[in-house]
View 1 (cartoon, rainbow, N blue to C red):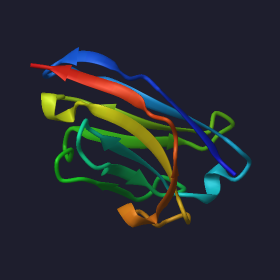
View 2 (view 1 turned 30 degrees about the horizontal axis):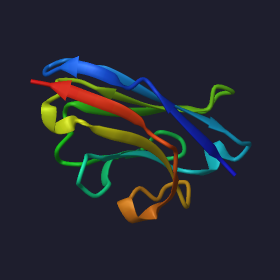
View 3 (view 1 turned 180 degrees about the horizontal axis):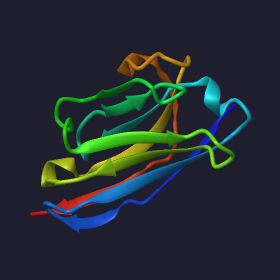
View 4 (view 1 turned 90 degrees about the vertical axis):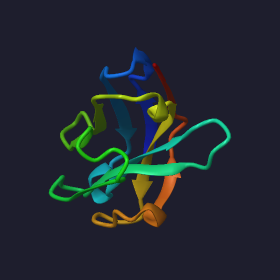
Length: 124
């Protein structure tokens, strides 16, 4: 089982950057693709980005392509990161780290568990 704890959220102005981190515990971390989702107030949770077990494949939502970058550390640190640049107010949401059902399954429907999330607020 993989436990997920997010950090790095905060408040920034439009055009700014944030880097989210997700610390993963559990010996099987490297067995799964990982991802990020977000949920804005009054909206459904939406897929943001995903990365395969070894980092060789990534997938992004159209709304964040070219601005966000997902990466992972499979060393003893066992973490997933989301670098977010050129943020806009539309990026305001709670961002959650997620685990896929398999090593290379990156489709939004492949994710089966989520962390508690970290708040990101972007002001105009």
